[in-house]
Image 1 (tube, each protein chain N blue to C red):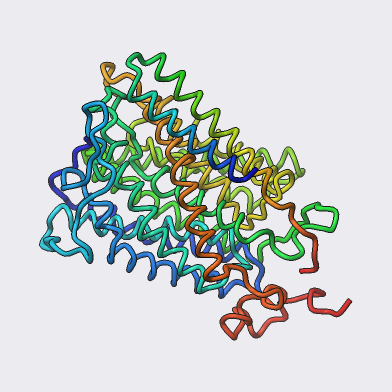
Image 2 (cartoon, rainbow over the protein chains, first blue to last red):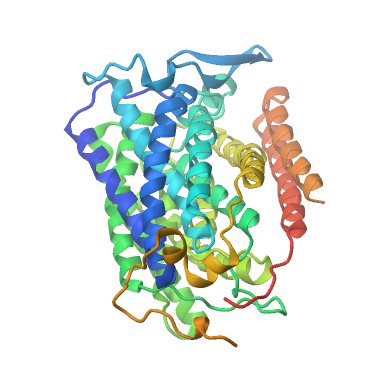
Length: 430
Length: 59
């Protein structure tokens, strides 16, 4: 079982307080990547997701997730305990708010769950109704995320693979490549499956058309905010969930920065080779993919390995975005699936390849692959099932008229940029 | 085809769990975990193929 750091000093608190920058960065990034007629809707959806996810986590999420060492339900299989869900009171009852470890963990987890719930917005933007956004976020934050987070961070069976089965250090995910990024990214994939492609994204022959985002500056500034937030996220996660010595925070910060930088540079080179010029929006996707991939092993890999992890993420992200769109009909305007799901899964695997653990702890790579298999074989079907049912009760997709008009006007009644002429020939009768 | 894909995906996960419970050596566990992941990839490929093709339409 992964130990929880017993004392929470200034380093931990500063790290935690940086995490909201990641939320702001994610909102700005997703807003910049959509057309101007949907900009306010995406930003409004981001605020709603934060509210709904935080409340859902308050109501029941933390009760399922719990903290390591707290009571939980465990099955005994082969003489070993398989702790699969926590047994905590609903509504955060019983938490000591006077500086107890649980209170700090609750705060970090509330921020983490809102970040995970914001990821699907990038993939499903421009056709996802606000009410459905809230309903889906509630399910993710109240049920799906807490269960996996319990397994990985709350002393569950994945974290205990090292103790019970001698698989290295158990499943390691210090900054949340799996728990936050992959869960959010797989949720994004499900949303695209449930919603389908945007009107006009594909021609009658099935070929994708380019629908550029409306503000590259938002996108790139969002990346900078995400970087600041990620410094806090990775540091806080490593300190609280992996029991890392606070003196290793500089290594975490350096690895986070190197991974993101290497990934963005790799994407810039890849897009330069493919399109003749480096693509700003795809390079931003590369930057975020580097952040997502670097999270899991931020405290366990040397800086050179962090660069390598980022380089792979930065090369894979633009190629995945292109192939998902071209070959598989996946319309993901924010690139969330390639960046968070594929980047996050790569980060989990990379811990097994590059992670430095004591020599007697062999089998780390198997523990990491078990985490990947759990995400693909348990969490993804669960998200798909829950959202398919929800979609029947509360249709996710906006009306064709709303999509044509833009969700700003259709759902919010006002555009993001009312003083500018923001639309071109989409509104002309043909 | 979609249901078959999801079933394969879940089956691959169960194969991975059984490998951890029943096998002892790192090599055999690793081999079965990789086999389970391969089954999952096959299942997800089926799920992807079962998705309806995107329809064309005016924006």
